Each structure stands twice: as C-alpha cells, then as structure tokens.
Image 1: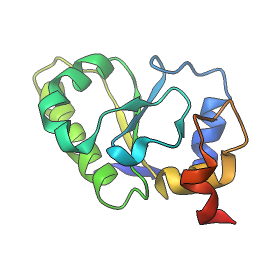
Image 2: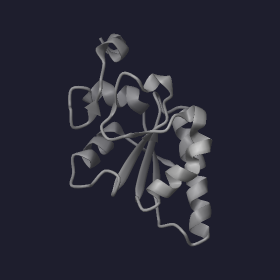
Image 3: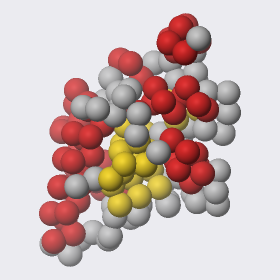
Length: 137
C-alpha cells in the first residue's frame, strides 16, 4: 500500500541534490484540471487514459526509486493510480525485472502544494491566478 508524503517533504526533496527522473518522479494524474499550474518537472498522465499508458509509465520509471502520485486533492484519482501502479511494479519485481521502489501519494494534492509554494518557481510552474487564486484569498 502506498504511503503519503507531505507537501513540505516533497519540497525538501525537490530542493535537495536529488535528481528528477533519476531519484524521484512526480506523476500528476489530473485531467483537464491540469491546466493552471503544476509541480515543476512533473509528468502528466491523465486519469482518463491512465490504464492504457500504465505499461509505458512503469517502463519509464522502473529505475526510479521514488514515484509520487497526485491529483487535485489526492483523494480519489491520485491514490487509485498509485495503487494500480504499485501493483503493476510489484508484479514485475516478483518476476525479477524491477528494483525496489517507494510509491507515495502527495497529501492534499496539488491544491495544498500550490497554496503553499505557488510563488516558488523551483517548485511550481505555469501557475495561473484565474484558476487557483480565488480558492485561497
């Protein structure tokens, strides 16, 4: 079962010497609600077609030790995608084709992350006030 990671823990990882797509990967499963901002360097894999792209995602991230999933609130789409992804990687690991991995879910999703870090260009990119600004005034 996937564990949660707080926005502060993710921000610390992103600002450390850890390398995106080598040491960690952030997978954003938001659909149309992806417009308006994202975690810098995150990979958008919309939930509406997640299963059709799952094998490609696992192949692209098989050597990355920590994969972090989120959606807007990390209540439904993010946790579901993390669970399916973890099960798929576990099957590969059982077959001896995968390395140890840590699958996480971003607590509070992008909503909480952007509320705290929207003004930090090292953490959030493409942020739009007309999408998020009214929610946190």
